[in-house]
Length: 331
Image (cartoon, rainbow, N blue to C red; front, side):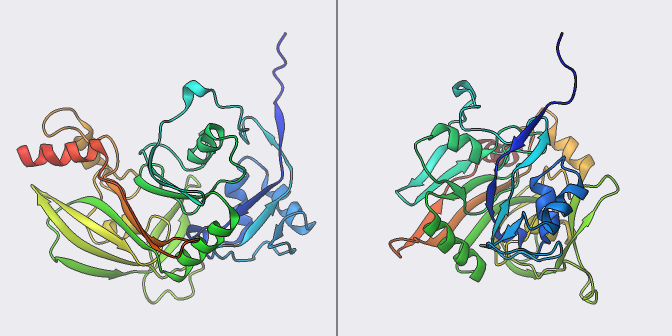
C-alpha cells in the first residue's frame, strides 16, 4: 500500500547571486521567496544560527541586499517537489530556445512568454533548469537578470562567475541599455516622455507581492525605490499605442506599474491591467485574440565582460504579438 504521508527531500546547499530586481530587499524576505513552503520560524532559525551567509558573513534578518551579493542557503528539508536535478527533466519536455548570441562567456536566448526564468511557485522547471539539463557539460550557468513569466524576449546568462559579476556591476551602475516594447490602451500623448515615479512593495490580502507607485511625500515608507522609465511612441494601432520603454532603473514590474498608474494599462496584464478589457482581448475573432501580456524585452546594449566591446542583443516581437498588431491594422 502506498505511503500517503508527506514526502520530503533535502534541498542541497545553494549560492544565489542577488540580481538588481532584489536590490534593497531584506534577506529574510529573499529567503522566503527561494524557500517556498519552509516555515518562517525555520528561516529565522537558519539566519540566527549563522547557517545563512551573505558574502561569507553572518547577517541579521533585516539586512538589505545589493545586486551582486552572494547568499549562501544551507541544506533545507522541504516538502514535495523542490530542487530540480539536471537529470530529472525528460528530454521530451525540453524547450527549444532560440539562441540570439553565444560565446564562451555568454548565452542570450529569446525567452517565450509563459515560462518562468526559475522553477518554483508550482512551476517545476524554469529557463535556468531547462538550460542546465540540456547542457550537463556546462560547469556554470547563471541568470544575469530576470524577466517576468509572461514577458518574452532577450534573456542574458553567464557561463562563468567572472562575466556574471562584471555584468551585474554594469546593471548596478546603469550602463546597460534595456529596451522593451509594450502595447497599451489609449492614445499616448507625447513622442517621448520621461517618467520618474518611485515604487514600493506591498502584500495583497491573499499574501501576493505587488508593487505600486508611492506618493513623493511618503519618504518614510519601507522599501521605497526610485524608478525611472523613458517611453517613446512607436506607433498607433486603432485605440492602442505601441511604446518602446527604456529602463533607467530595473525595479520589479516597473514598466507595468508606471503605465497602469498613468492610465495606460498594458494589454493582457493580469496583475496591474484592466481585467474586463483583458477578457475581451482574449476572445476569438478579429483582430486575433491576445492570450498573453503584450510586453517584450526587445533589446539589451551591454559591454562584453571579456572583450570590452559593445554588444547589441536584439530580438523581434514574438510572433503572436506581431500577429495581434497586424490584426489591429487590418480591422
